Length: 271
Image 1 (tube, helix red, strand yellow):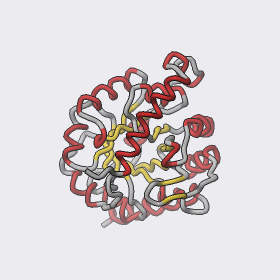
Image 2 (tube, rainbow, N blue to C red; image 1 turned 45 degrees about the vertical axis):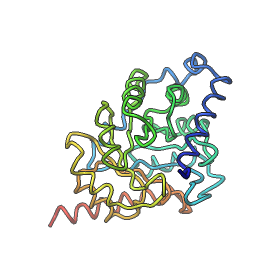
Image 3 (cartoon, rainbow, N blue to C red; image 1 turned 180 degrees about the vertical axis):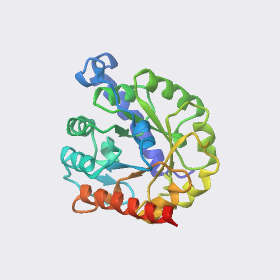
Image 4 (cartoon, helix red, strand yellow; image 1 turned 90 degrees about the horizontal axis):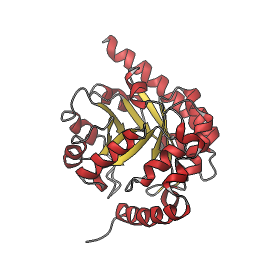
């Protein structure tokens, strides 16, 4: 069977985590200053408003290549907060996204918003890294984890005071995610194996996600019309990175989308 980019990323991640464990132990991570901070709730932020944008910082994408190679995390994360984002996502994978853990730490120093560590979690060690470098939320990708692993990592994350965003793409993923007390379900409109994108994934899965579950939509979101259509399907948040990062000023791009969505939502509600 032909290996996908996702297979390659996960294989690389396992080797990377083994190497990182030798450089810095869990005990050392737990002594870092940020490890003891009280974490912030992305879930509460999303529930406190009609919709929320989780604005993503990333320099590179396996599907699109370089987005903003020399981007500064502090500058862009601050701009996202000033634009009205509900939370920030920071890519920390180096080989495929040109990110690093230090971006998380730098981003933390720039904002009072909840921060999601966006990476490929396959080991509990990465949860300790997330806490030690300033994250409030971790991403679990159902496609690369078993039901038991999702349950285990969710419990471990909660023990550390971290929230869990579990990303799904289809019913098989969703079934696994619903077996664990995750905080947020994120429907990725991008197939991580083929990189094809369709908002139909969010629309179709919406009917199968319990109404009391905080849900967000990820990838391929570009217009206020996209967001309002999904708000009507029960989505409370939207994780957007590429559309912002390819613009000259990511913060301004984020602000314009938030304002346009608010206007469009008011128009729809007035009908």
